Image (cartoon, rainbow, N blue to C red; front, side, top):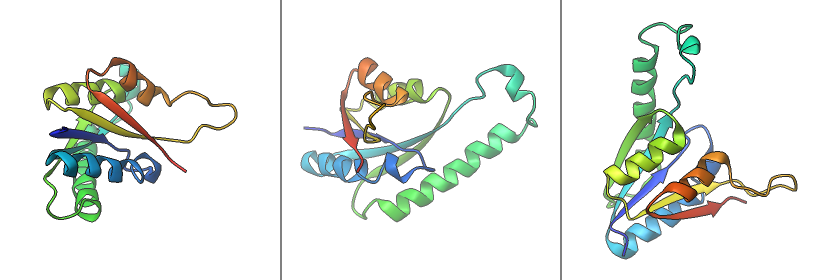
Amino acid sequence: MFKTVLLPIDLSSDQSWSRALPAALMLCEAGGGVLHVTTVVPDFGLSVVGSYFDASFEENALHDVGEALTAWVKDNVPDGVEVHPHVLHGRVYDQIIEAANRLNADAIVMGSHAPELSDYLLGPNAARVVRHARQSVFVVRGD
């Protein structure tokens, strides 16, 4: 049913993937699919912010995040699963949607925090992906 599954993760937050990864693997295994794991390095937003960093900062950051994502895949995705890591750069939700379209993903699986009393909405990135993605989006809540 799902041949291509996209799993966006935040490498600095186990909550972004600890429950979503098993769900993504289950979808892949059920359909004999391919797992694409992405992480997004946010851009600076305003150009004035970027002017405070040296010219090689962005390239070095993307390289380091790529190495960290490769290590994460090796440590967390079981052998035998076809998996492709992708480091993206820009606005998180835009990059997730673009990647899903470019990869012809059938489904996006995202982790989301459990809502607290004052927080009854999804996080802003997950909410935008749910609203704007053409694919099925599975939001897996944490504990």
